[in-house]
Image (cartoon, rainbow, N blue to C red; front, side, top):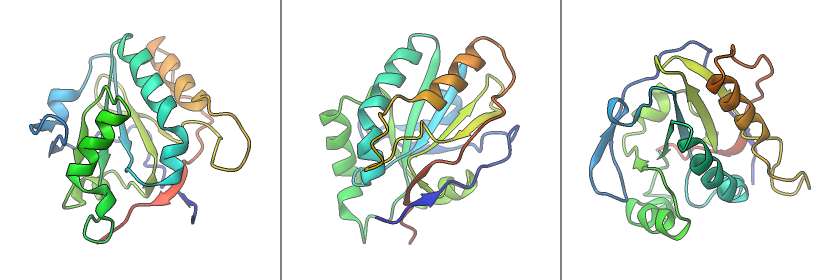
Length: 184
C-alpha cells in the first residue's frame, strides 16, 4: 500500500468543467448540473483503495450533513479498469448502492478530468465556492489506515464550515494521502 500525496492545485483555480457518466443513474452529469450556489465538493475516489475504504463512512456522513446546508457533492473514479477491474463502472454502481452514496459516482474513463484537476491519489478532496473557485484541497483529516487516529473529517468539515460562514479559505491545508490514481 504505497502512500501518494495529492498535488495541491492552487487555491482560486477555476473548477475544470466535466460531463461524465454517473454509474448509478446511467446519465451524464456535468459540473454545471451538479454545482451548488453554496459550494461544491469534488472527490476522487475508487472502490478498492484502502485509504478510501478507511474514510468512506465519514465521506457519506459529511455529504449528508453538508448537503442539508446547501453543498453539493460528486465522486469521480479515474482508475484504469483494464488493470483494476474492481473499479469498473458496473462495480462502481454496486459499490455506491452498497455504501449508500447520496452523491453521483462518475466514471472518468479517459482520465482527462483527473489530469485537469491534477488529482494524484484516492481519496483527493476539492471544495469550490459558489463561483467554482478552489477554496480547499487536500485531506479529509489526518487519519490513515493503521495510524490509530480516529476518522473525523476534521479538515474537510473545517473548510466547509468556513465557506458556509463566508470566511476566507483555511490557511492550513494539508495534502491528502492515498493510493495513486491507476493511470493507463
